[in-house]
Length: 318
Image (cartoon, rainbow, N blue to C red; front, side, top):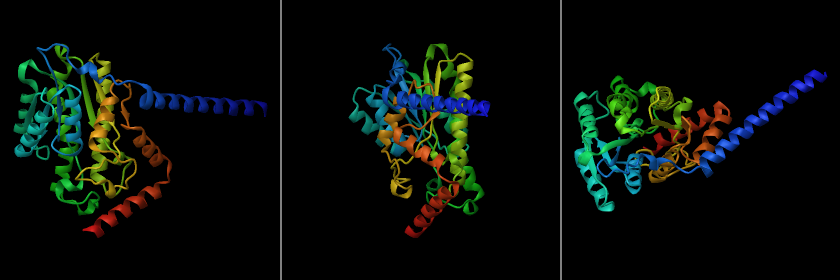
């Protein structure tokens, strides 16, 4: 009996230490630790620092473009619509006159080798000796990408729509990373930062099957790629973000339950502030961390019922 009590006490102590450690890490990451994103800003005026933001003309990508400019980075905007890119470029140049802004056109929804080469060419021949220091994989989306709602039955998804969603959310970011790897790992171009935006949908959510699956891929790729870069001695920081509710035109907060909602600019700031946190995958903000842990704790049936409710409400609103 005494040995059983001792064993249980040992287990309790180990569990308490684990909880304490997690609380200390949580406090450090979200409330105390200063960001190290400034290490990616060049001090050499002959090699100014640039950031490439995919899907940069709307929503979170647009928020990143503004936030990066405000922190001293020049920005290479990626998008598929040249007119929208030109408008965003002009707006950024007006708001941040000290920055340089370039554009690169490619349709992430298509298996577009020419478009991919165009982005890579722009990223590897930046003006005034510029060097790519930050890569933000923001481009992505769910049902609205194929003209449907935020929530959709997989059985109502066509084969072509499957290709579109996989291309945008998974294939394009990975192909672009592979194509830019020589730049990201070049000794003359270190250090570099890669950010991959995932989603809380990675819990395997119904009514959002393909989006959930591809965003899970994003995060797994992020952690695996980051560990490989570290093991090979490359100064490439890789962060994967479990993004929660963000109020964008394509996915308004009210259609997602309004929990832990952030604006695109707030989200971009939170992500950039996590540079140097030594985590592979994490929610960008404390309130997204709270929502993430709630999702981990509640019974599965409650999550499924909530998703079905949101899907039903969206269908009634049409």
